[in-house]
Image 1 (cartoon, rainbow, N blue to C red):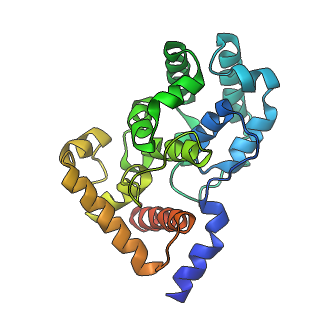
Image 2 (cartoon, one colour; image 1 turned 90 degrees about the horizontal axis):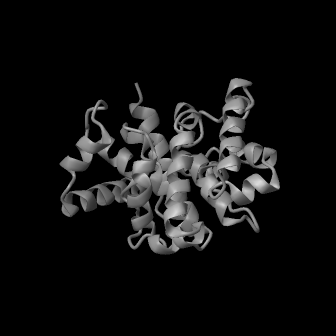
Length: 243
């Protein structure tokens, strides 16, 4: 028990999503793409021009230049030196490598339709609504790749969205980890599992299963402490059940 608590406390800084002071909304959204790969986010953020940071989701030329820069970072191995394959499960290196162009296009189109990024976020209102909106933007089919909820949570941490209404967010990596505890087959896609867990009672049962697992090993309370517990839970389950 003490060993598990020590592991959780030692990983606190690694598990949490860092909140950067005075980060503009477009860059908060960009941080949502990187999720818990903070070092890659910081590296890419520092390499972007002021114009790219401001107009990433509103100007096609800046969107294209950022896409090209992102691809160049992979081709030259700049991201490889900053990837952390041990910390967290929300954004595995292979997931971070693919899909950026599609994701940025989805955000770009949503901004174009709503008028600006602030309007997009205001329409979302809550973490749950944001997750539903973001989910199709991530071209990921496996359970452990459900990271749209984490992007929504980052927006909430910056104060742009209402936080989730329940203590545990039964979506994203948390839900995926709870599903794995139910001995679900790894080949099942997100769509298949969404069909199986279509009933709200089944989704709430996943929350309860995750909560019981976390509280058993981390009997504490508090918003950020629970986030640490959630991150530990996701990492522990995925690590122990990975092939």
